[in-house]
Length: 180
Image (cartoon, rainbow, N blue to C red; front, side, top):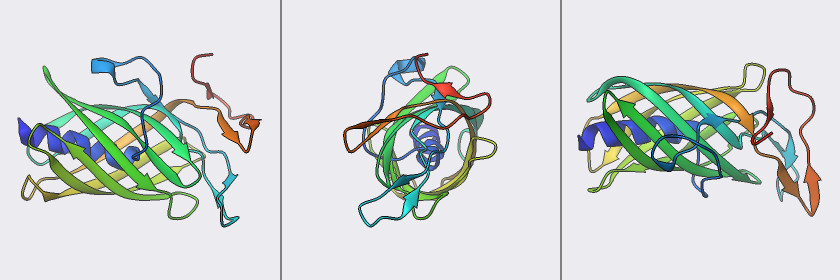
């Protein structure tokens, strides 16, 4: 069960990163997942993609098998974090994820899951044209040898505040702000 939790957490880490979860509705307090791309500027002036939002998708874990996943991700500049939930049959594993946008669509990070924490390294890519976050994870502490992959589809995005101005996202066909 710990492996399933770690596996699920790792899958969502790729899909999300570690700051804090945003509001939404989903299983075990984890909002449904989704988030579109919106270029913003980091402190260094480089553009980053907006991945903040709610996501839903699938996960395949070496210990737990196939399951479903949800993520709710928040973002500040290039830092991303949030809550993940991995469901395998009747078992749901809650996890936290943190990452940094390395370039406009690459998200390396860490997922932590379980009561005996298992930590996973995650590598994900966000496809802004399809609003999909896909990646893989591998345990590095607490759960030996566990690996997995995930694919998450953005359901809605969180509007971000840029320096006091309400950051609205340009039209994204099929994608709306969360809560609207």
